[in-house]
Image (cartoon, rainbow, N blue to C red; front, side, top):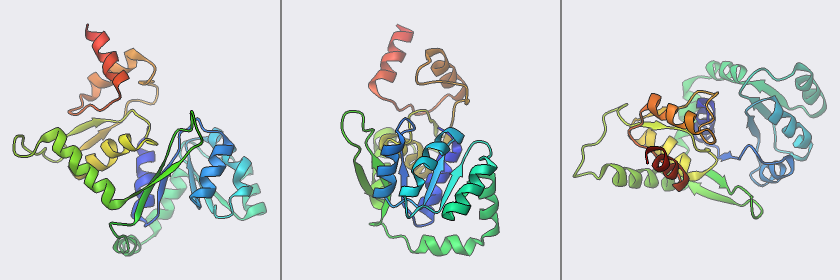
Length: 239
């Protein structure tokens, strides 16, 4: 998980679009299927390795207009080739930020005014481990309601005081392609003006137990969310 993933996800939503997250393990054929179904016109990839996956299938995606690479600069040869052959762009994260800085705030305000609570906000796909991937459409109202319900469970209004801005600290470590992780890390954290923290890039908190507890000790989250396996790890660590 990275701040850029969250920013890209929210940028799509704030611009009146629909955000779709995928597990990074998916192959190019599964990626092609999802991109066709959701009519993706912008695809954001983490690095050059995943960029190569998209380049293998981009000719199948008639709606695709641009690919954004978060980490590092995309190869100049790929940028020139794709633009010459299909009139599609490949831009780095920094180039995308420069484009955004040139746009007036009024452009974004206009997009925000057009969003209705029943519009689709995000599409979440299953991992596709045991069966073909399936997408679920979630509205803006659905996600804001879920955030309020999470607040009720965690803080129990009427019994506990609401957190002050920045007081609630969440550690982001579960894949944001899952709706549970998105709900806690992104939408709940936004709803209470919390702080979302990311472990260091070299911390494999999912598979490395030492890195897992080192990240918790450093971040000191006020709320910890995880699957049963995470709590089993904590139980055996302190047993």
